[in-house]
Image: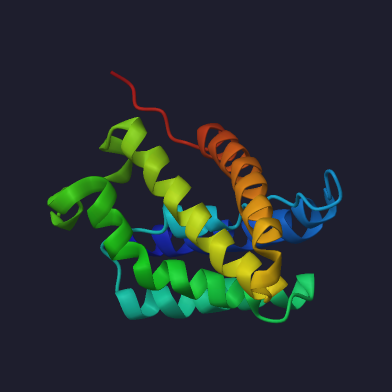
Length: 170
């Protein structure tokens, strides 16, 4: 049973990196909107797994995207930031419920799931675009990029999440 989860996570890792690098990095809508969807891996990653392993996997996820995107470790830094802050974000969105053994992300109310995903995306994009621009004289440019790309990323992540979610039968 455990090997099934490893296999699913490996396939998710590869497919999300490929989708990010081959499709999303080439969208370039309005000259600067490239949605970032590989964050879904961190959203879908099992909650009760070893945190150190999760941070190492997050490093490799960001590093892999950086290699193929030529982005000077911006993705790695942003991905490690949200991987490190994930328990705090989950505690904010779900309360202490996520610490129980029986907690499942699919069973949480949809608004809490969307809040959790939106916070992951906004924190990732804040770190990413702050490092990319690296000049607070362009604060409005950073803010514009964070806002617009976060909306595009959230829209695509919700779309992908709903397409690949497992439906429960009553």
